[in-house]
Image 1 (cartoon, rainbow, N blue to C red):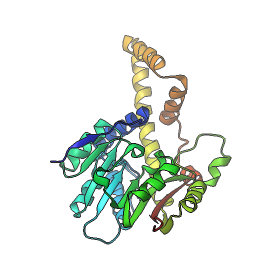
Image 2: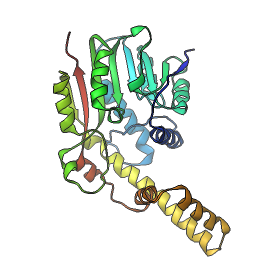
Image 3: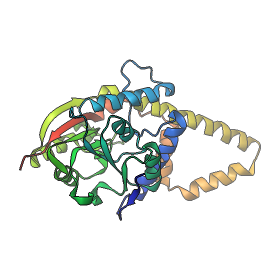
Length: 295
């Protein structure tokens, strides 16, 4: 059995907590630890189909891997280990980088200890014995790392025939003109294109799958609205009964969450502004297969 290695890191704690919560919800809803969008082509957008959509996402992503029987793959921001497990099943050797203890534990369980797991952030990762990889994989993790670090570092971790594979959300040009918060996230696609030139990275494949993943936003919004409706009904019931629990919860809510956090949460729970159409306007979800310069 391989062990989890902890590396000193300056990780974003709130970001790690958010991923831990997402992991819990994913396992509750789908029974698996996928922490990424789904591809909804030919699928009805329902919670019951979420797992199928996420499986379709992974299957599509694997189409961009080099056609080799056995590769050394670095899964950067590997979540709960679901992607790594599939790669291991295909005969590849996988190292996983995750930022939190909970994700590391889940990844170890999912991969049955068959992957080396590094509890750290990519910025602080140092491979043992100067190990080099065939693939540096960023599956919805690229957006969390400064591009001036992620791109040259990933290039340096590759062997002579290695590639960088990125599947993530990028902000479109329309986002710069928006004065309100919009769904999605990630680096600017324009800046990404500039960085590719800066670091002399050759684009082997570039595939825009924005339309295929966008329904994930509609499903997310419906889920938040369902929780919001439950909260409204419970609050109304407790208030009508003058239950002390209502007043304690209300007080705790205001005490432990700052006003900005409350507004963000309430917007998610009670509004319907996050839509797939807005997502497609302000984002580009793109798969990049990149080749570093040969030295």
